[in-house]
Image (cartoon, rainbow, N blue to C red; front, side, top):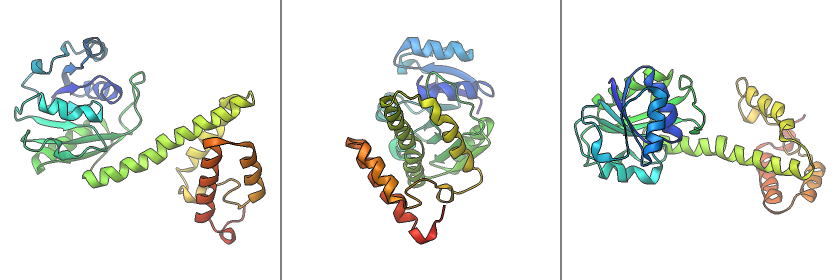
Length: 259
């Protein structure tokens, strides 16, 4: 499990390439945009970049397909089985995209928010793996442990649940910050004012469950404050605030919370 080909040069591929280059031979980088493949290859000291799937080397141990979800099948269909381990990195796509087209295959999903412009250290990233047989799974778990302290098996159903949870935890939370930024901009205030609050909120999760760390007017059933906020908001912000406040109140009956 030493020679790796990375198919992709975007958000996930960038951090994977950097992480794997420290412990494996990343033998080739593929991207539909040759300039992107060359840029990522140069960044990790790889001398082989290509934009042609037909020129993928045939003697690697593992081929990691790290492209957008709707392009995974295109890559699989455009390449052939060489007996190596082939995996995709999607949290929401099933393992059976490979069925009938590869003899050894799996899923290698890093549950993290990645950006092409920023390399994310992988040692604390949780990787969830699935494979079509025990041998492939053992190899995939072994590869994962080279770059992360958190590698575990998870089938497609579990990954789907994890993906939904990550959307709530990351994507929706980030959208809430976007809305908060808009509210502040309307008053000429900087979003930086929120950063200590956000950091403390996240830090508390190291010690408390999300349910037990909930604060704010809704958990106190302070309907006067909630109504005052609603009177200032409009459109999507008003409706989201109302729905979220109702959800918090429903989960925290008035008699159960004193703050």
